[in-house]
Image 1 (cartoon, rainbow, N blue to C red):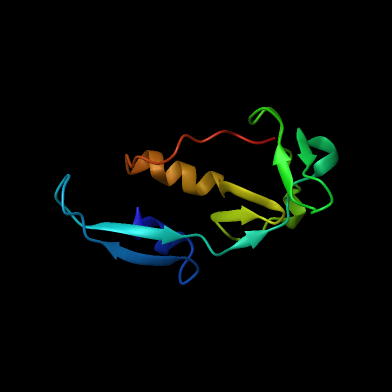
Image 2: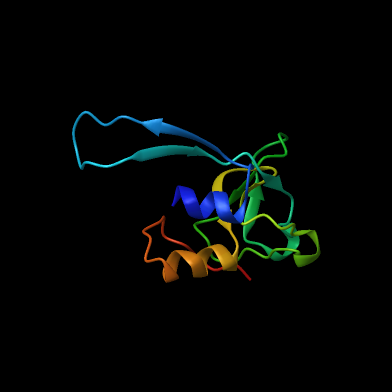
Length: 111
């Protein structure tokens, strides 16, 4: 997973080693997604604003999220401006996960 992230988004995300005292053996990494974009089209997405903060939240799950393709960069993993929490990945990232048989978070397809 770390290798894939570094291949697709070189020098973008932060990684640090995790030493597990119990659990499966192996090398484990923590990851921080630093990259942000503003690609969600609010008027075509099932979202709501939290008060006057400008922070947005998805209504009842991931029913409809529409991204503006003209605002997408070459990033393969990112967070959306104004939307704390969700992690977004590109189609290329998702295809590589499948090809390499890597486990990842449950992914939902956006419009």
